[in-house]
Image 1: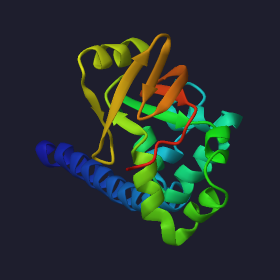
Image 2: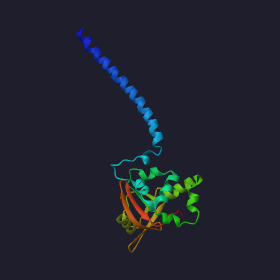
Image 3: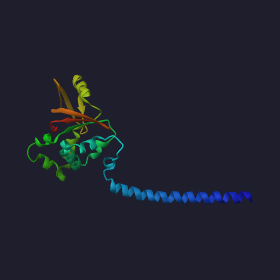
Length: 190
């Protein structure tokens, strides 16, 4: 008789745990749906005050890159700039976008040109980590850099200048998931 008395509380406790786990999973399903609505961009919308900033977060905080950020958002490719990396982005300044023929940026930002814009922007992102020394090394070896739009960019060192795809590197910023090389020109596909 004592065995039955001891076993019943354990069965009741087990049922309580199962019920609690069941209601928790329903809540997490609801939380998942709410999270999907709150964070439609996936990792690109995650922010905290503790982690080092990734490429997208650094670009968003840089006023000279507001046109680039607007273009990335219009092309809906924020995820490219937040992946774990390492990643190198050749980031044209607002002045570089302004140097394009009049109306080019406005035209590219139209929803119907989203794929073209995405292709152009992916031509500014390379898997791997290419700081100034890394770029010089690629140039010495005569290698081209593979880009996210499946093209290759030539690296040329001319004195102190480093040119990538015809754009001059004018600054470098290290981020949590790679490197931003600020460039003075928008790199367009041939």
